[in-house]
Image (tube, rainbow, N blue to C red):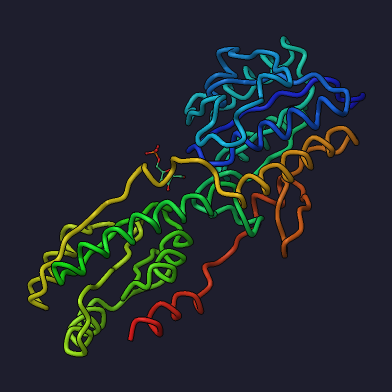
Length: 322
Ligand code: F6P
């Protein structure tokens, strides 16, 4: 491909705090590298509709601290078809866009890979609160979501403690347990249930009863949304233990809020890195964090790379609950 002169940026899938910081960093670094920057609204959905406008440096000011994504986001079913990808390529060509930076999770990177296979230079930046992108140790938004949920669970613990209750708290993360396990450690939960590993409900209930016998005043059980069923679980725990049990589903509040320092800094580093790759004529890559370092890998390899939830962290929850 000849020199990349114009790039497009889009955010796709679930929003994540820090996406705005990433957009700002891509845009400013690209502009600094002499490129023209186009903002694509509403992810691939907006791409298919040609919702594209040039961004100036001022357009991305006053957003580093804001949650969500000012470009809006969407999950596009139409783009996931061969016809959709072809149309996307056509729209990008009409707008003179040589390369595209996609901020999102694995699903969004599949779209980027399809564009790459159709001659569009692409770079992916991992952005999702779930931290479930296999090729990177960290995804933008994870830290902020953890802090938001941690504060909420601290509050739930206050009231659980006053009433000497058990609280079952269902948290996000789709089918990945990174959010629930980190929260269970940070909030000192009695137990955590994640989709990746089996759990023993009888053991959890025995732990609660033994805790009460040792003088515990509250019990927090963190449940991944991928396990679900927190209402039925409450009933079951209450019936066996005789301890009043309440369920809270934290829901979308976990995705909102101003990004943390970690998310702003990581997003800025990853965004600038993505723009620099394109300026060097390097593309069809995903920007990742490995062992604390920002680096990149081939988009096909990135999509095939898996990571696993650390079992030791899961065991730590149990060890700390005694
Ligand atoms: O991927 C981020 C996430 O918040 C998941 O944790 C959750 O399962 C999903 O998105 C919810 O998606 P939606 O906002 O479309 O309901």
